[in-house]
Image 1 (spheres, rainbow, N blue to C red):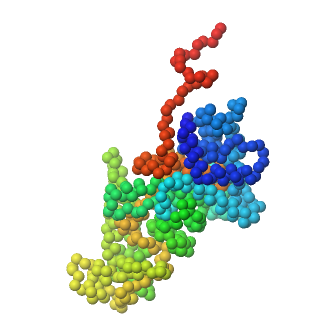
Image 2: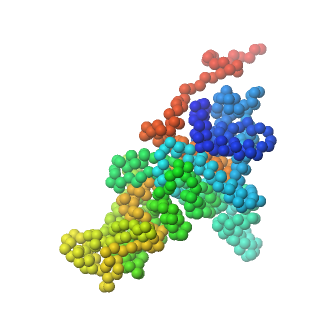
Image 3: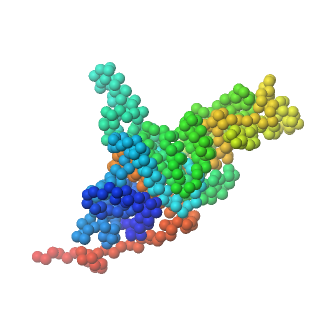
Length: 569
């Protein structure tokens, strides 16, 4: 059972986004058929609670919330039961959802005859509606302008066309054609015969992280890009204060974009940044993993720089290594200028599997203890190498208006002894000594050097990669992983194949936005309870369950406990 107060809270929650009012206006603009008995705010509230209570947005489960989980008298108040007691039908729920998604449908398969300007307007309106729905939980939380972005795989309700087996081909020509079909499926190309072969024409084959439950790194469906709000970075030596910094912000997804499974999503991420943010606060900082930072500078780094967004990023393994700057003589390593005489063993420092460790459980077995100890040693080695290499890095002094940065060499910064810098000759024996090049480059002779933004642009960031400060800042990206965990874990939203039976990118995006809104509400309520924050009126509602009373066939409370009497003879 779902009490009146719980349903009203969900109804208030979705209504304050403005989405129900907007959808009602759009649907009234296209009248036709019988009057609709199901109000949009009631439908959205039922969908939120269906995902929260039943881990499902299958429309049959939404119908169950509306007709089985609510009290009979409350159903009548909401118009879900007619005067003769007839309940809302599943068909009416399906009709309401289809009416909403048909209003915004912009995909080529479902709206092939739409002019390009109309298609673009529909897509923009649809994305704005999704943004308002997913941002409903942030209404009374102070904006930060800082977000962690990541993508997670969403399997389609349909099954994709399987890879043809060449062994069954009747000729070499057929085998070659089958291989071509597979390659085009993997790339997501829109060959009409391949699209028709799948029940979900917008979904594509793509890659995902292989886990114990997934069993494979291939999936047919979509990628959901999510922007999760983060607060200011905790100090690397904050200790217990880091917990307070984390609790300053609830773990909320404020914006999503859904793309086919074969897409990298970088272009769509930039489009998300360009859409107006509802709180009016510009994006100041973006935390991204290697899937984004590995993109070309033109597609990623330059785009963020032109928008004034600072990036905190991890490096792909192919991006590590030393790159000498021929003109000025310094060496770029992992996005930062270093002394050209830096020891060779520091030119490449590989990232460990994990950057931090949780305490080892007391009940850990032998294998778990061995793995934990191996990770601890890897982290210690990494931290030591980064600390040693940091001695040889150039120190940033200022940023110019052209986004160039001013640096001084480590000798002038007092970190190393160098014959090319006479000021260091009196340094003690505990200071490392380097041998300068035979011919001093500009980096050694000038007081400062100017590093232009075109030098290793995609790896440049404010914090030194691998340093304790960088790890403390980048650690905030775990929040987006936490939101995915809340939505996908068995005890959370259990978002896996079967959570909905709808197909198509518009319907999938709409239902994912509802699922995100439901997950956000759960996160908001938990955060408010943990921190005592009561700025949002929704957290003050008393939804305590007070039990229920059984009624007989006449609607009177049942007080007797005797078993039913035998039927009369």
